[in-house]
Amino acid sequence: MGLPTIVVGSALDIVEYCGVPRFLFTDIPLGNPCGKPEDRTMQRAIVRRALALLGSADEPRSTQTTPFVWGDHQSWRSSYAQVTEDNLDALRALGEARRARRGRPSS
Image 1 (cartoon, one colour):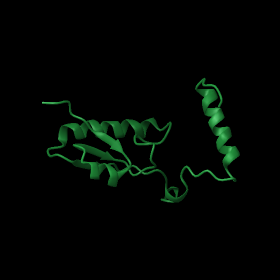
Image 2 (cartoon, helix red, strand yellow):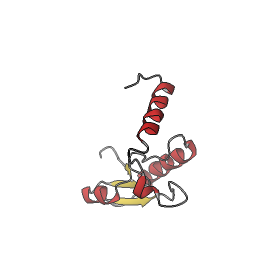
Image 3 (spheres, helix red, strand yellow):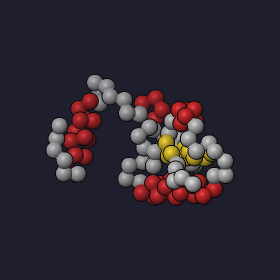
Image 4 (cartoon, one colour):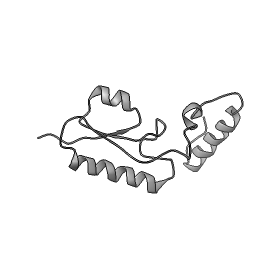
């Protein structure tokens, strides 16, 4: 018997097409498969669900969907991670502040 694996992600169509043994789908923006940044409660709950799926999946290509959402509405789908002339400086400042908090040099 091999090592059991699970994929936690947000690209439902792609991952199901690939046919992984176990997939925990989170319907939130790409790059955040384990929940919102800094939301440890959500992150722990998603990891717990992933570990539970390891024990409960009884057939290949098992997919389970989490109940978590990114916000109160679905408007993030059209604007998440968009860089425009209007927000470029603000995003740059956020990135610099994040790197400073983590003790990483600026770009």
